[in-house]
Amino acid sequence: MEKGSISIYFVINALAHVERLGGDPTALLRDADIAPSLLAHPQARVSADRYAHLWRLISLALDDEFFGQDSRRMKVGSFAMLCYSVIGCRTLEQALQRAARFMGLLLDDLEMHLVRDDALARLEVHERADAQAPRIFGHETLLILFYALTCWLIARRVTLSTAYFAFPEPAYSDEYRTMYSPRLVFHAAHTAIEFDAACLDLPVVQNEVSVKEFLRAAPANIILKYKNTKGMVARVRRRLKTMPTDGWPAFEVLAGEFHTTPSTLRRRLEDEGQSYQSIKDQLRRDLAIHALCHTSKPMMEIALSLGFADPSAFFRAFRKWTGVRPGDYRRQAVEA
Image 1 (cartoon, rainbow, N blue to C red):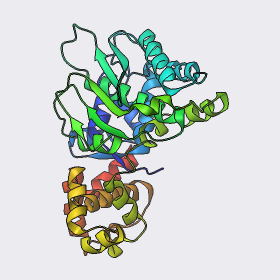
Image 2: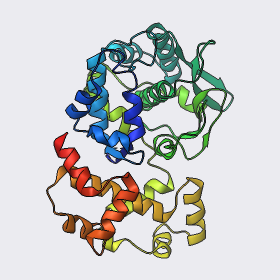
Image 3: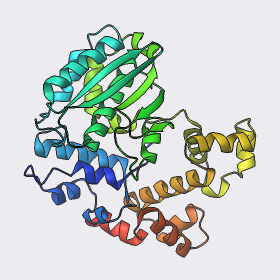
């Protein structure tokens, strides 16, 4: 499972209601090995596994698996019971309809709807009529929970044609492309994910043994396992990860490896909101974060391993990526 990193915005949003509900945000961050000072840097990122750990810690601290996003607590164990309630269903459609009804018993302010419309199906997030504004993190949480549930129930990643969001495009919208689909629509009537309706007829293949394994790996598997891995951006990223950075091919050579022309490859990457340079930068960033947090390698060695001629160039790039210097990032990670 590719680890990667997560925008600091997701950390900030997950903590939004912690203090109001009697929790200690700073203590939770430190327990998750996330430096509290990173919250002040909009460009900062944290490793995905640490973010997953924070999810679990917040849920336990608040006894709320929905992080205070609803007027009713979704008590710890609720999602597990939802999973157990659907494994006896025959098809994915039956399971998702039951899961949506179950979620309606858990939450008062937000609910899920499954809509089948000819060749397409949509999982939609609906807010109660008197909501003042979309609870963005609530929408994000419901969407990722139900998307992971959808994929797990039929033991395959469901390819999404479009992801819709009932709010303006946030600064971290590139994360949605990785999580869901290259095609994003904002200011939509409902937050939703859209996919081939034929998937709804597939059989549920999980049971009481596999559900225990699924829940034991949660929430990391919910956040990470079903990321968009079939797009061209993911293919390029996987290819680069197999070789040292100083061996990364020229764009024309890479296009040849994928049996396509440079112009076609460039267009396909642009369709997913990326370029070859941005993919290389993001991969270097994630490799740097991992090295700083999980190894004691000196800065010179990290810089050279990432393809930088000298540490100063690495320092400038890392600060551009995350808003902080690599030395400060490592120190904050250790202090956390």
